[in-house]
Length: 378
Image 1 (cartoon, rainbow, N blue to C red):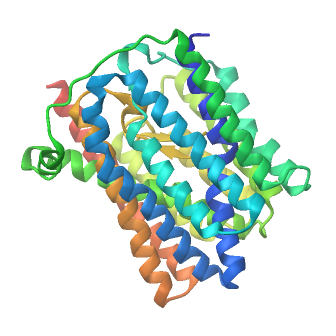
Image 2 (tube, rainbow, N blue to C red; image 1 turned 60 degrees about the vertical axis):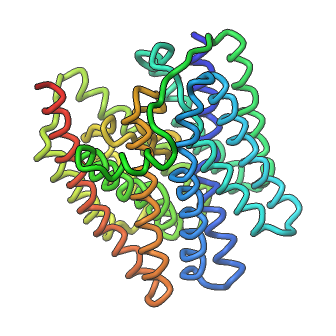
Image 3 (cartoon, helix red, strand yellow; image 1 turned 180 degrees about the vertical axis):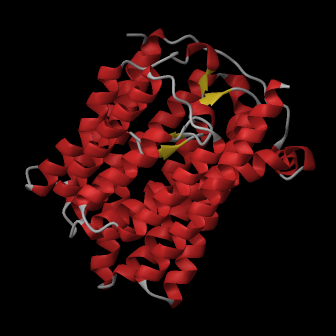
């Protein structure tokens, strides 16, 4: 196992075990505190928007800083992720100033996403299947431990912080590399909205919208479907990931590639089916159906860690930064829309609106990414 793969595996383990639980636990805490799931949805949406607003604002600075060394940026990003989990752990352990803890968590997660880039040269060509299986089992283990009260939330996030820090050890064998970034801070925003980059912005924006619904709103809805049981949530997440791995493996062995039309139909129908999901079995089937049959590369989705990242965390060129900013803008847009809707509506209507927007955005992103790929081949 290379140093790069060891680092990524450990960091992905921390996120696989804690990331999705962090957001649903924040929602649950805010909902219980206010006595309303609707208020909890509004507040967690605002916290999520804060995290991705940080990404938009910080990415131009972080990308420009890559000329000082990618490894240095990697270390800073990893430290930010570890500190984010540690802050949340402290918030659950102490109980005081929990709102400050989740604000710090969101800000540090935004810093992590903006700074965490790796060099193309040290990116592993593929990940061993056994690692993916182990990562898929992490939510099941965590869900059962928390559901049975063997592990407190504070211990979970402290462990995630420790694993994140442990992943830094591999940097002792990781070579330093430097990348250029041609634009200054304000110029980066001009380039983001420039006509020649419009297709990149629209594709990443639409993909970000879908990701926010898939990685925040949907897990919250699943928790509600499962009656607030974290044990069942962990089991459902792990079964979904394992079924998704199986389907992708079958498609790969059979050399089956879905066309944009088929992918669009799958994405749209999956979001419609989510409206009618009433139990964990349905959740597993729907998520495996969508995740196992549609390509995630262009949309930057890592279902194991419940993250969306441009170019698989790999810095390629200035377009990587624009994609990351576009993704963050899309995610911020959706959660702000949901926060506004939830403030004046009801919980079910807000979730339904999120699914509808996500379906439209997912189909749009699929076609825009396909068009970009065709142009790249010309």
